[in-house]
Amino acid sequence: MDSPELYNVKQQFTLGAYKSLVDLTLPDPASTDYTAILVYQARAHLALGNASAAAALVPSDTENLALKAVAALARYVGAEGDAAKEEERDAALEALRDVVVEIEGEDAEATEWEKGTVRVLAGTAFARAGEIEEALETLSAGNDTHHLEAVAYTVQVYLSINRPDLARKEFERAKRWAEDDLLLQHIEATIGLATGRDAYADAHSFFTEQLANPSLTSPRLLTARGVARLLRGELGSAKSDLEEAQAQMGGTPDAETLAAETVAAGLGPNAAKPAEAEALYSRLAAEHPAFPLVTDVQQKAAVFDELAAKFTVPPVATASA
Image (tube, rainbow, N blue to C red; front, side, top):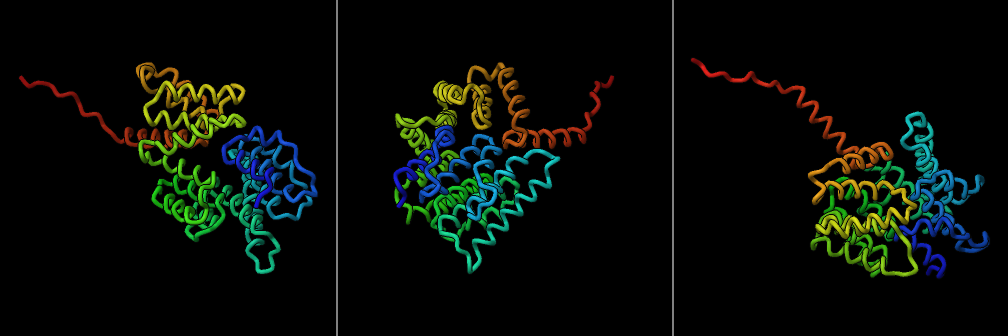
């Protein structure tokens, strides 16, 4: 069983309270919670887009496999999106593959926590690199794993490739042993958000319930509820959530919040005045060129241009005398 401190850290990470985690004072290195909390803090830095801060937390001479994995993931994320750093990205992925092999060896001394954490971190990098099959294999998809974070990320991967049926199968398997864990509830809300089940009621209720916690500050939860409200047609409430999320981020929205604001700007009364939505989309494309909404629009624009180039406008018909 986790200590109260580690339990609280896990809850904050699950709910996206990353700022609180990066500001957290680490326990004494002799503490049994030290490594786990350090890993969560490094992952919080990565979630906030600060790969260098995540890498700096990990001792260069560490032998802990979970710390090796989070350091390699930090190197990958730090080189992501930069064409000149392809070798660094490839080296980071190879380092993660090596760590995965280490935890699978018969003489591996890693704990079950280390093994599960390595799989989640490596699977995260592989999915981000587009290696979907490798990510799912690393996460033990379909093998009834009892590591709930691995299940959560497997669900995310399946949803990203439009397989909500397989995502729900993972969730149903986890329900048999995870009981009413907060992360399990988050998984159910995520699936509901992607599929529209029960008019997004599960997702909306979960995010609203968690936001009622007075000790938690999570702009990511606000963005998530804002998206749920957009999908429910509650445009005014959605915009309010997104504005508050941006304010909690210091006025600079992350990619998810900016994308949601872009969509919101193109709905309702503003639909006839697309200038705001176009300006927000241009900003999203410039700041987050690999974001799924941006790549999807660009792919569809390329297909349109290709088909338009093949289309020949017929001559205007003229009436005969």
